[in-house]
Length: 323
Ligand SMILES: NCc1[nH]cc(CCC(=O)O)c1CC(=O)O
Image (cartoon, rainbow, N blue to C red; front, side, top):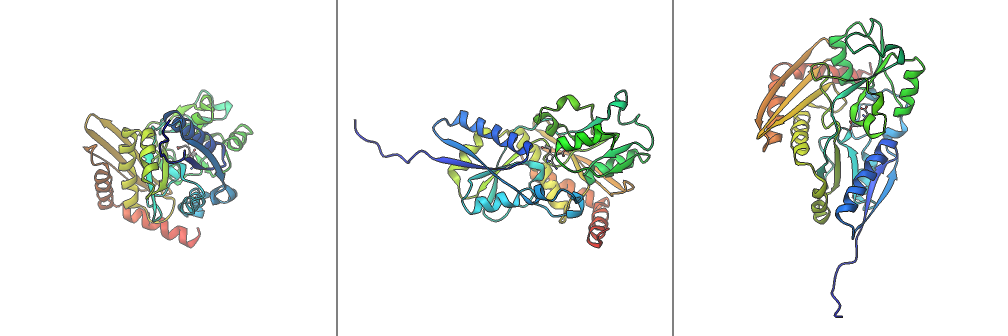
């Protein structure tokens, strides 16, 4: 037989955080790629990120973006790993020089979910009693719920999903607000008591989707990764990310979105709220799904004209003062 010159089979190293959710997501991506490319070997390499180490400080006060992604990005730039799997909502809208968002996978239900203590099993978000202690670590959830339900008490909650559930079941909270997608991926979908409608809570940008980041010059890998991209999720998430990119200014802020695709059209709804839930700017825009980033940017400008910038500037000043 004549020998054929071919490049040696490539091993592709996937970088993942060590959290249970991150591992489930990374192994899912590995499995999908392995099915599409049986001749390539895909290995998962784990790394701790800053966000995994700081567990006792409210996330909103740490304020820095990229808390869950930085170490993985350094690993890619140093060629220790080839790509990283992120919960898209944890991936900053501006990536470091040299890296790119290569693919976005099909999203789970992006909505927030209400999880209740057993004693409230006959209740919904709008029938929980006054003074009910609601656990959330997100300013976005806090602001929107405070606006509609000022009679609740809101308390920060950190730790992995099991820790949070244990705190709820032990009676430290009456209910928690968590991402539907995270609960489903970790096999705790049965704890979802109510999926919050978009009138109650607009979800985070990119919630429920996975973002795959790699070196911008690794064109071979980028074309492989397209095999697991979900075009509709990508269009929706690119509109959401463009909206956030224009509005944000350096920390976790109460910004929520919803997107829907109808045929050729994409509808983006966005909200910017003050942390006390008193001020709230919300609007929707429909345009061609083929130009999602322009739509996101345009909605951001519309909300700015309606006062979003004042709300955001106030939040940045408060955080800088350390309040
Ligand atoms: N901020 C932490 C985080 N990052 C991704 C998810 C859940 C999965 C997802 O939204 O994709 C969560 C937990 C939560 O918000 O309840």
